[in-house]
Image (spheres, rainbow, N blue to C red):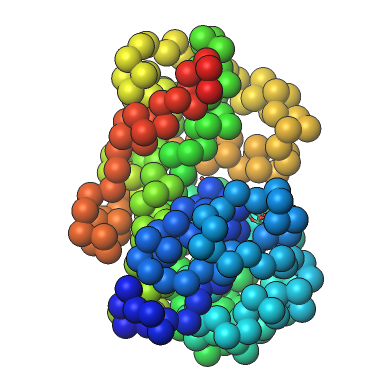
Length: 295
Ligand SMILES: NC(=O)c1ccc[n+]([C@@H]2O[C@H](COP(=O)([O-])OP(=O)(O)OC[C@H]3O[C@@H](n4cnc5c(N)ncnc54)[C@H](OP(=O)(O)O)[C@@H]3O)[C@@H](O)[C@H]2O)c1
């Protein structure tokens, strides 16, 4: 694929198409005139994606279920949140059918303490990267840091209820990246030449403590949101049953390591898109309704 807006481009299979990033990648590709195949395990009725996206049912844990979606596709946007067991068989299948893969990974190679803590997801990502590298696929690795949209699950419920945001490691600094910027980079690197072999750490434009991030959301909403520090143990017990303990421990370790030092900030979004990454305040302004009571 040498550029967008071509009528003869083979379709791109978007995995994770119902998820945060994949859904936006579907939109970006369609806007650019690229035919999209959207993968989901769900029944069609349960999925709200643009009608122009061709829906395919498939499951990464059942590699052969991907064949109809892969047959005739030119590239794949790969999001892996499934267990690792079938990754090898799936990557082999991708290599049989398509030329390009853009993989949504994480910045586990970045030498910043935040990214160097024990992290089962990073182990999974590294394994998939190795599998992809062992094929002849043209690949691009995208390594976003913290998604701006994490605050939807983390802080929006308290903000909507008009309560104090209670959170551990308020002084930990991260550089939240807008999901729309991740998706725009994904679409660009899928559809334009020059990104094969590319490996990009994607961050937002600024290092902000978690407490300052809550302030930025408050600025976007036009009101002050009170923030209160919570102990890591309290956080563990609050999230017990709601999130895997390995994910909770991973976050606590990363935040703990990020106190007192600026977050890693990259120029990759601006380099690839030609526009600066969106700020968290911009993200919050554009998602303000999610933080208001009536939403
Ligand atoms: N959150 C962060 O701050 C952050 C930072 C860096 C990297 N990441 C990485 O980003 C990825 C998650 O992206 P996201 O937040 O956009 O995803 P998400 O919103 O969690 O959605 C997960 C997607 O994966 C699909 N899926 C799950 N299991 C599947 C399976 N067995 N077969 C096929 N599809 C399956 C789901 O589709 P259906 O349910 O429709 O089948 C859904 O579309 C993870 O790899 C995560 O490690 C996240």
